[in-house]
Length: 180
Image (cartoon, rainbow, N blue to C red; front, side, top):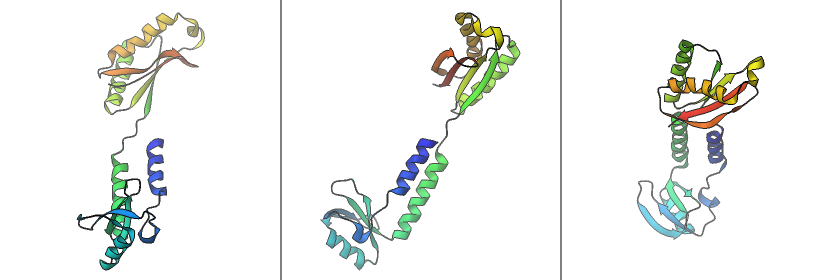
């Protein structure tokens, strides 16, 4: 979510130049109905915009030459806001869901937790599986503990990849899986 939010704030912070704020001497100009006026000078583009009683809006400042469109600035802002809201609505935030099991967790409980993990993976979320090791179990053989972790992973019905191999953590043994 943070990266996507940063992208939107970047878009909002980059101010769109209109009319006399445009600095480029030559522009590729598009009309309000999509007609192409070609590459013309800034003065000529401004003259066309004022004749049509519309604004000259710099659409793509990084293109060579920059692209500008003759249209109403209020309509441009409205359309831009609509696009941003639509993109924000379609954006899926990937969450990391947690499952905690112990060395002695029963088969039925493991099946329930694996079923829940499968549902989360289908939704597109990542799943962090913690093998909780209280007390003396922290000092058990690492291969035995990894085998205990595999008991849960075998029960997951969705195809997945291991994003983070099982490794020791403060609680015990942790791995992260995500959908293939």
